[in-house]
Length: 90
Image (cartoon, rainbow, N blue to C red; front, top):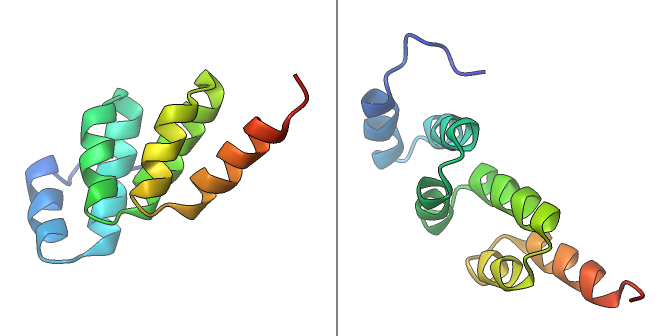
């Protein structure tokens, strides 16, 4: 869980400076809020934790197109999950 003493703005500033832990915390916060837009932005910035959260959500929804988008953004596990779903008997 994210320490309540860390503001989102502080975490964003740290993430903008390249702090991966702060980026992970932002992804955790976005995931808790269900903010898929912010998760997508974080994924585009290279945040693996955002890729994990988005992949988990896409698998649960059976959203193959979203899995492809996540894969294209560089999160390899989304490719694995996409292939698993496509290979599953019908």
